[in-house]
Length: 206
Image (cartoon, rainbow, N blue to C red; front, side, top):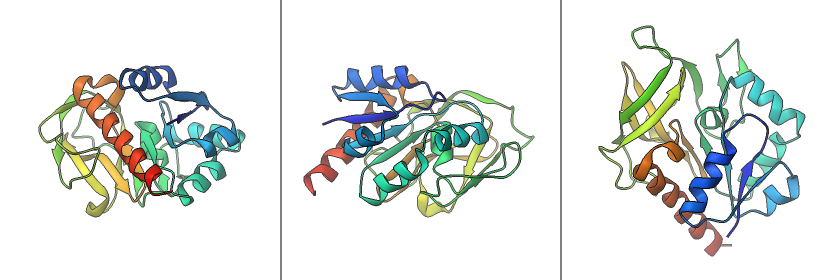
């Protein structure tokens, strides 16, 4: 089993790779279309600003590649900003269109919250899915200023930070984690293990 970690100079790819190594999941950091499409699963990490990240994906012709991979049933996990990129759009620095893989919109945290949201927060599981299974009450590590606004049916787990923050979202074979699983200790490793199970299930059905 091989995971493609999307390389577009906007994510902490090495930290994600080390976490996958730890759970025994073979992976490669790549921006090559053939390698991404041939992988059993894809992880889209992300740090920084939404418009710049989308521009970086576009410059590397990766937007259509990711959309094609998802259309063919490949499991995809977006992490932190990578999760927000899965949405339809964002308000960050003006309106920017996203990948459109999970219906929703990224908006700035309310002024009742300290921005950026940085630190450990508890997950409340809303719906059972492989990534959220057994995570109710566990603490994960967040670093962000924008959050996903989407329908409850797409929210698998959330955290309270002046507003309900979707921590894990999903739409069929597409998953997103607003927090950093690779920085969230044992809980984060278990969440990545859940994504591994998703990939195994998808591979067995092909």
